[in-house]
Length: 271
Image: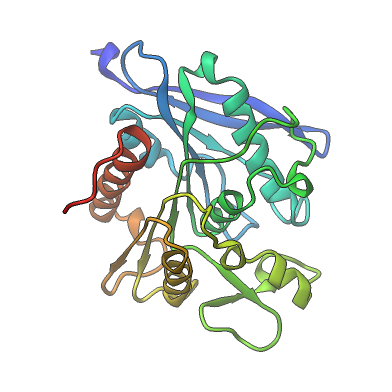
């Protein structure tokens, strides 16, 4: 029945960047409920390629579980250098909160989910709530950008310039004008602190694009600050392993369980 299906609304304008429209796709759960939890989905592609349709499978699966999903685009490095990418993610988040009533979401229950380069962006966004230097020109200035949970799949968590760092990715992947200062300032690892939202990460042990140690160093930093954090390592899995439907279904189940714990109703820790 059509009434039991996730409704997809494509190419909704949420802001502007470089004078052009920025667009997102909306995945609306069945039913007429309001005040739902919501998830902003941020695609990967090495900051230089990819588009908002890449996480369609997650949008559908998570929406079937009752969460409104917004899959956003952002300006790629070839169009605009860093920090345009995080500015656009923040603009999408501000748009969600500013239009919560129309979208049928609870502005106090919003999570971020990103994969690969998108995972870097969601971790960075989670660690820089309301930082004015990342406002950009996307729209809805001044709207709160705090989030209640963040999910990062095979995330780049630190960059290095020159000498390789444990868990690091070369800053040249993000910028055509790399510097040691940029590597330091663009690393989510350096944002870990006691105010960081509950975090879930998953990674493949055989990832040759983003080393699995990137997830471990972020996990350790967050746990040291007593942030509720979980990390799932998939044995022998490579970068982007959840593109395989068998893995994708399982990781989506883990995501929904995490959202149910930290976005829908907090579950008391076992005694």
